[in-house]
Image (cartoon, rainbow, N blue to C red; front, side, top):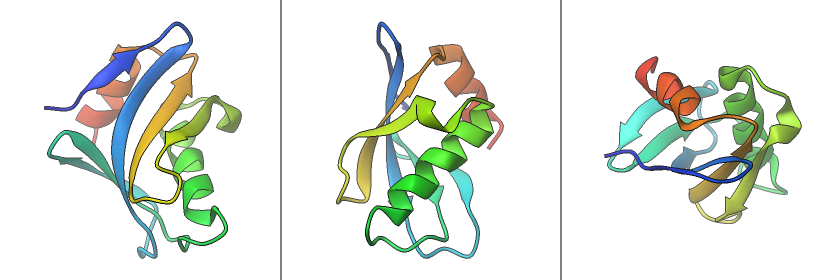
Length: 96
């Protein structure tokens, strides 16, 4: 089951990133994580930046509202999104 933790400023949730994909897309759930594919390579933070941009775009928020909370050098990451509620993220999951 997908777990979204509400915080005072927004939400935290876990993802699994697949870099060097053909397209940038949110695939769906893989266990308790959201699977995200990005075309950027996993070097110099390029894949992390692409993930943040994709999540922001999908939620319709500014890019600086999304950040990597933990797992910057791992495919298993925790994403922090400010200015949104749990229901906003659940809508994102259900649409993919």
